[in-house]
Every structure is written in C-alpha cells, then in structure tokens.
Length: 220
Image: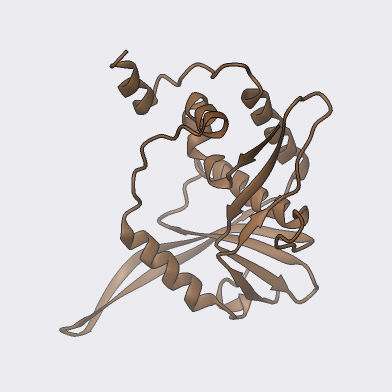
C-alpha cells in the first residue's frame, strides 16, 4: 500500500484536523472545497509569467545568480518507505517556480500575497521540503532537479497605488524574501509521523476546532 500525499495538505489540513487528513488520503473523502478568490490565482499567474526566464537578481537580491527556468511544474517522488511501517507513500504536487543557479544547483520558491506570518512559515516549509524531496528523488519520467540548495517564500504586499489615467490603476507592492533552511532529516521524520497516522485502522479523533467535523457530527 502506497498513499499519495499532496504537499498542499501538509500545512493547514494536516495541522487543522488529522481526522479529515486521514479521510482524504485513505478513504478519498474530502472536506467541501472553499474556492480561493480568483484574484489571488490571477495575481499568482501574472507573477509566474512575469518572472519566467528572468535573472534571480530581478526576483530578490538575496538569491544567488541564476534564472527562473521552471514555472508551475508537476512533481512526483519515488515511494517513501520506513522499516517500522507497513505502508509507504509518495509525494505528488505542483510547485510555483524553480530556479536554476549558475553553479548547477536549483532552488524552489513559493509566491505568497500578504505579509510574512511567522506562525505559518513552518507549515509552508513542509510544502517546500516536499517539492524539493520529490525533485531530488523523482519517480520515473517525473521532473528531476538536483541538488536543491535554496528554498524560500517570496511575499508580495500592496503598499501604494498610482493612477496615471482614468482607465489604469497601478499597485506597488513590497517584496520580502523568507528563506527556508533545508532539513531533509526533519522532513522525513514528519513524513514518518504522517504514515503513523495513516496506517491506523481507523481515523484519529477530530480536532475540536474543525468546523467540518462539527457540521457532520451535528447530523449523527
């Protein structure tokens, strides 16, 4: 048995309610989706198109020399197995951008709209580690980039507006780089913890803060 794990679930779904995470991965029962406001998807798409092929110094001064060579690519890892677990897993997802550095190494970057939030950085770190792991341990015929030496979040936060004419409005945004230190050992410890949840014969208890579990429980 090998479970598919989505990097996007490692943040708020796993932390928010392990029961809902279990039901999604093991039983294919998902929470009702809350659509992301289309404006955020539009902004993300514009950013990826704008930076495609550009030098890293146009993205942020703290990045090593290189170019943005990959945008919105799917990744899939080989199976991840641990000696003391009966089940395995693999990672499948889609990153924002990847950078090819001049020294032959690579970086993985996620775009965020808003101010950096220290509370969320560890959760986003799991996602970036998942993309990096899948790229460095790619399944056959999947995209492979190695080694990944840089990971981070680029935050864009609107700070000023200009209007040159009645039909065009321009937003100026602050740009902040938050680097994520790579720690594969800690990431694999997290994956082993996830497998410990998934190989249980029944779902774990729901989170007391999970609105979906409260909603479903109200009809029992």
